[in-house]
Amino acid sequence: MKAPEWAALLVFLLAEIAFFTVNSPYFLSWPNIVNIVTALAITGILAAGGTILLIAGQFDLSVGSGTAFVALMFALAAQSLGILPATGVAILVGMGIGMLNGFLVTVVGVNALITTLGTLAIFRGLTLSIGGASSVRVTGFDWAIARPFFDIPLSALLFLVIAIAVAVVLSRTVFGRTIYAIGANENAARLVGIRTKKTLFLAFVISGLCMAVTGLVSASQLGSTSGTTGLGLELAVVTAIILGGTSLKGGTGSMFGTVLGLLIVGVLNNGMTLMNINSTWQQVAAGTLLILAVSFDQVRQRFIRS
Image (cartoon, rainbow, N blue to C red; front, side):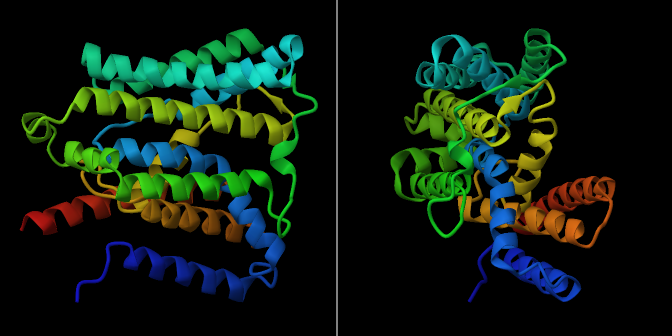
């Protein structure tokens, strides 16, 4: 019987847990487990939308700057309009970023990697230009740090709900099956009548909605936002998705695999922090994981072809 693709990831995650449990008496404590999941909330929500896109063979590298821009627009709107209207503004801004990316990729025909690298720079620049060098405070919007159940923050619970929802969409809906078909062979999917451009456009909008949610979560967690919000998020998101088994070429992957990838990265960062390892080495570890994940994906593709 063939082992599932995520079996090796699960073994690696368990090995990580065993190693850090031995090296730190605090690692397996409930507060620390909650800390790990909470730290993954923003990256995980973005990775949910990113998983859909990468299965379809597309990228969105604008998620970090998009999150920062959404948070800034929310903070500025909250000062003049109030929290509820500002939340609507944030959702519209996030959707707008997704629609812009989707339009450029599906209508204009620009490569997704180039498109989202461009919008990454655009929205980071706009955030720094509009927000200035100082932080913009947000008051009366601390819902994400509330802990209603088992001392788990709402931001972590929201991530779990979104992860489950995306897993169901990918495995149980026509849209999900269409995403896999486009990623496996876009031309073949078009020939059998699938409206590939419409589906991909919707996938980019979903990614934009994820930016809207993470912008709101970030503003709520920190109580402020600045030009440096979300820096490096795109690297963390791509690392988790590819590490979780989603192929760079599209057509394969799952939300469960992405969650395992997120946990591997999250456990590594948390364990290194508990062992007082310098944060710069955590960046080295994250970069190494990304290279290993891509290398493993290439080896797996060769194995499948042979």
